[in-house]
Image 1 (spheres, rainbow, N blue to C red):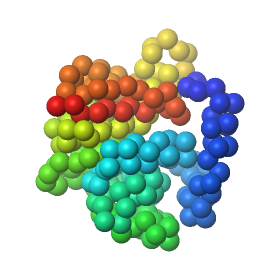
Image 2: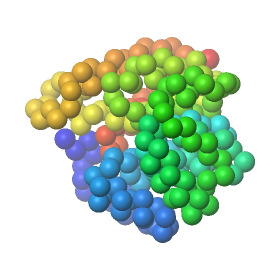
Image 3: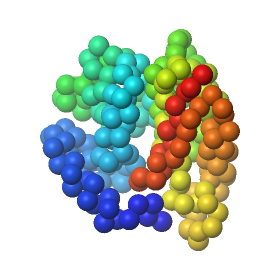
Length: 216
């Protein structure tokens, strides 16, 4: 299911041409060649915009792949910020280090190889942003781990929360994933929406991105 009309997405992406930096183009080309899931440029710009809008200086990503979303967060927090990236594959750490170093964006990065939620638990203090893009069955646990670790005025952001429309239950979408993943996403979406400490919505771009602002 196309969450946004393809022509609309193409138009928006067409306005983002000034981000055609060599390293970013390499990262996008690798994703296309390997079929590796990245958030893409339209969402990447949103991540940077949201981070800059709250003056984020301390961010953790739960699930970072080879650093594509980290590219945008690093631009936002700056070289004196603190950006924690996480992934279970040590090869992705090597790729992220190479890409982000060549882009001049490695300075704020600390990369944790292993379980993302465990990495969050291992760190002390609050964050300006917790960004979630791990395997979908882990979304409820990620929200429970993150919700107390975000400062008032900070953000919880999560990718793939419309899950090609599967969360609606009304679409005939071929299931190539475990159906329990859909239920896990729905559980997290409901928990966020009912948490009165947060003001939240789902942006219907790409595959859906939840944005939740902590109010108290």
